[in-house]
Image (tube, rainbow, N blue to C red; front, side):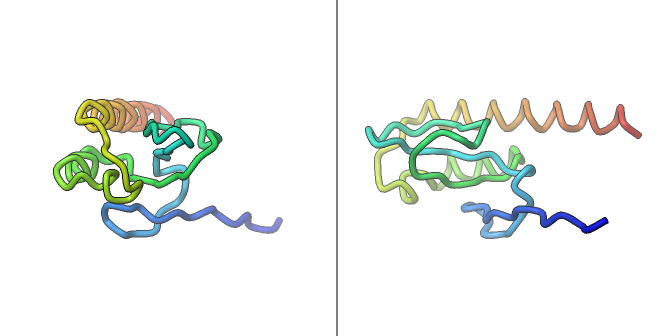
Length: 100
């Protein structure tokens, strides 16, 4: 069997390339609303960030999405992002431990 190509995306905080499934997409729609896109299918300008709490906290501290999307992003969004990434990281650890 042929090996499938793994889609890679760049983490905008660390600048590292990673498999798309290890990242979460953040999207800015045409009305300049910034939100988390867990499905990866929302329309709009997208950027990716690692499913790592430290990286999400770094994005919050540096206001990364304000710069990337050239718009003012609410502080509440960053808090929600950190909580979302923390939750996803915990889920991944729980389910990966169960598969071994």
